[in-house]
Image (cartoon, rainbow, N blue to C red):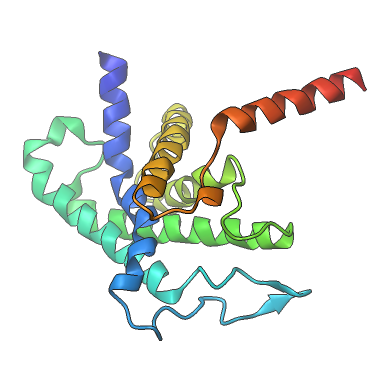
Length: 202
């Protein structure tokens, strides 16, 4: 029971980052076409985009705005959930949620930059970096405000990895994600096992 409570507390702690990460896909319904211009302004390196057209100014800003909204709700609920919270949202919600959102969005951009340099197309799964980029960014950015500890970072990463895979599947079912953007976990693990077998034989 204590472990379950800890996992729920970690999920609650990460809510601004989780919602920020999901927000950009909805920005197209809110912002103008101009605001949805690529955040990399179309810059290319050796024929490859710096980030890609799918990373937009509006998506980046909307992620931060949503994180702030979630942080505000957590602050309003704080008097009733004090024992459930790592953070004193009454005093820190603005800085906390801003850093969470900014870190999540920045982590996603860094991941996209690395994927383009490796020649990976936008939307192509890159496990586990697709699932943990925003988590790492959020935890790094928010650490000056609150550091949850290395064990909790590990548990948060594990929760986020599994949760992100499930959310992408739901997104696919709701036509928010394309088939190529979701992870066939069984196939991925099978391929990974086969690669390790080849290396051990070699």
